[in-house]
Length: 298
Image (cartoon, rainbow, N blue to C red; front, side, top):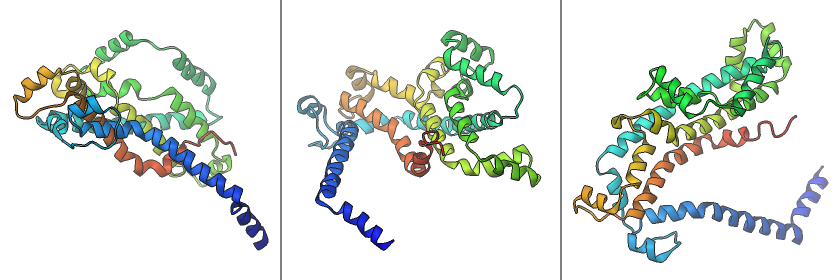
């Protein structure tokens, strides 16, 4: 056993093995930089002057750091209020979507459910054909959901693709485990809550992140269903900011500070992206496992 370990260690300590490790580090580092470079440029641009952005080209460290763009974004408090509203909608919407998706997926994963094949065909049908924007708008209006945050949550409460992935994940659970719970007197609901869900933390974290990102970045639904400006989400507010002309900016600021137009647009990207980036580290452990669901069948 010890000899086997030594031989395995010697293989990785050979010149070829060391060169392969160096090549991997360089290649992965290059890919990592290519991935991060656009974000670093946007971050640097949000802290740079308008002159530097227009004359310098690509850079990741600004020469003259200025926070005028962020001061302009947060000077009225409108953006902060919209971020708080959007955070509330995101949290509530994610909970609703997770509850509906998982409670719908578990029964469909049970082979003894009557009509399961018909329901699955109907789910697949919704992936191929949709009602369209106008019919969906009419449904939301007739339900009285206009100018309601429920209009941003309920129409997309269950994603058919996510539902099918979760159903396949539940099918991987050993049937002996479910049968043992039933023999101990557990009902289907108790089995789902006490056994299935605790063992599904990786996939819960994965789809919680998917749903949260989708709701946070949702612009079109808010544009369609929310006409009250006091209820605008952060994406609508950021869109209003980025479409302002230089003249409009100067009128709003009234000479209090000089606002670089391009830097403001870069700052809006950072503001819209940063909350999700702050959430990801807490879900990264489970997210990495959940992404492997369905890729390898044991």
